[in-house]
Image (tube, rainbow, N blue to C red; front, side, top):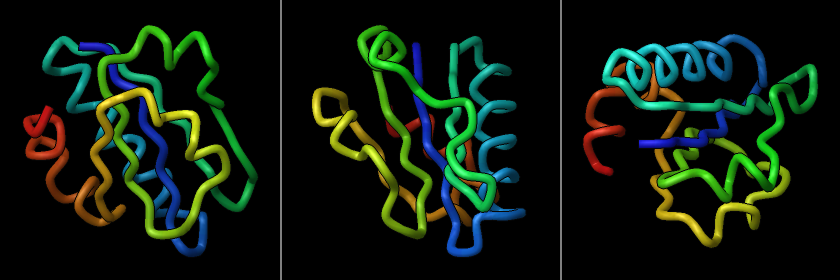
Length: 97
């Protein structure tokens, strides 16, 4: 499966990046391709492109705040969860797909 994900917490620091790391680690361990965009204190990093979205089967939005460009994912099956859930249980998020 090809996954795109965005993580963003309220302060845009630690939890944004922790969630990105946990989602990426678990998805890759299961043989999935994943690209994770972070929207944090440093702005948008590892930005998901139109090509990434066109190739994706699923979008995971691990967000506690509104994000820029959410409309990009309208064509995809999307799972929206809290950042804390992505950190604690990335397995169940990917399993929902």
